[in-house]
Image (cartoon, rainbow, N blue to C red; front, side):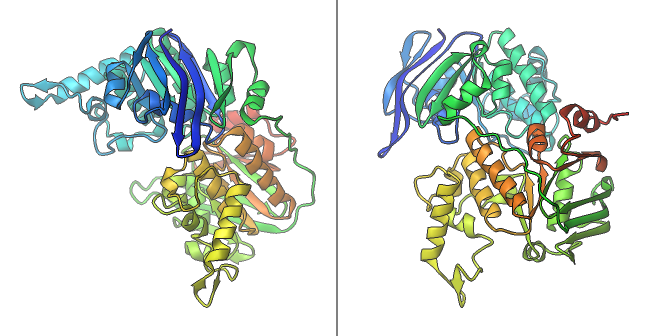
Length: 501
């Protein structure tokens, strides 16, 4: 046995993040840890990596008890961690990021050429395609993740902890990552994989440990279990199946006609003659590999970027190139694709984040004076309804897990009860229980006669929720399907630039 955690407990005051958790990892094994947001997965691994200290319990490496006080000790013991939110220096090259703190020297000076050569050789050894001289901040997310993995490999890690590594990756990048993980295992590495995605667990993990409310509810060999059993262990119940009921569609709420957008920097066409509509009582899905115009479409609808041509009509009014506030006031709510960049003020507390576009409503203010008691009651009820795990609504948003922050943003936008909701990656990084709940809320909004535009990189989500599906490729709409005729195979072909003829 390569490493073992025995009866690990971590307390914050009276709250137990981990409660008598035991876990082991064998050499050249991929061991997945799954559980709902706040189940204690990341806290457990932060203790193994020396970022937190256990309240009680022991850690053994190769049978020897270890006191891992800080990450430097973990690194010396051959343990590396790739965090959910990358820790790169965007202006640095890939090579500079990889060798940071361990720079090769020529005399007393940093040897740039040697650093680039060593990183290139390391990447080739483990089958990771990168250019060590590229600027890290300009690289796609999938490449940035490879850089993070190369960092821990460069430090000599034999055990690699990956915290939600596929949360921000496209389907193609996910496939490439899983291939890389298999190569790492072949080369003698051992991997701990924290994830919400059970299909990935079943595809790549040897064993899986399930956590619920800080406790282990099961450790299973993957070949002897299935997603349904893992789901039950994660949430403590059977998941519901929520089919789309047939309802009559109403008037057009969103109408996009022939919009075009070009890049100011390069002049490249980002949106090319895009036309689509969303009516009352329907969810319209947009499928496509990330980077094919979905982000630009979101910006055009929400007022975050101007279009060069065409029109955007919302709730009967021309909103083309109007301000964000004007568009919001016309009946738009928006779950953004990047919860940190667009969706939240990280240093503000949960109350401020929840109320940032609602503070002026009569229910929450009178003559410009905020009704603080009503506001706090509303936020507390929303946090409870959407199961946002936090010690207090006064907690800064930066201390929420990614999945819990996503639930807070979804609560804020869905509960606005606007006639139109733009839901971009609404379940990114959330656990299966929260995903089920958010899906229920989207379907309920649709059933109440509102309109939803769903943009998601998860094909299963698009197929499950959409009355109609549009496929985007290179800034164009290249296909449209109704719910009955859409399939993963048909959508995948068009997403890759093929055709279904």
